[in-house]
Image 1 (cartoon, rainbow, N blue to C red):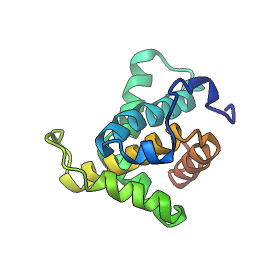
Image 2 (tube, helix red, strand yellow):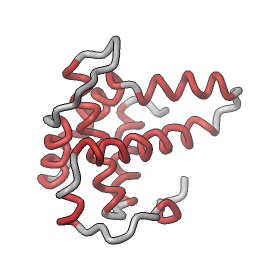
Image 3 (spheres, rainbow, N blue to C red):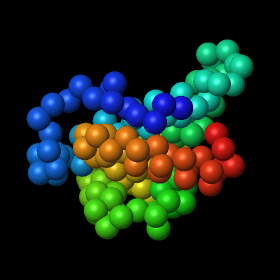
Image 4 (cartoon, helix red, strand yellow):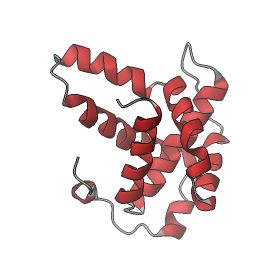
Length: 141
């Protein structure tokens, strides 16, 4: 996989202080798509039809899977990254998906918030490093 997400960098004018002013749910909204793109890119190498690819993607991006993912990398996060994760985890969302525990949903939101934060800071190397840790802990995607 390409070691840079720079081609996706279309947001301008975000520095660390302006990113910290964003809602954690807004960061999670963005981070969800970054995380899903990484998952989809990884499983695309498998020779499957789109329906099967979609089903497999769901297995990795659902809240319970993302909650497990953050648990596997939490000790590897910097203080700054841990603070961003906690900010996302503690954000008050008005919805909780069916069939997901509130705890898993909040931890997943924290993971997504972290990925959105790192994306806006253009820290693609760190995003890929964390994603690699997640895939290794799961026995590869």
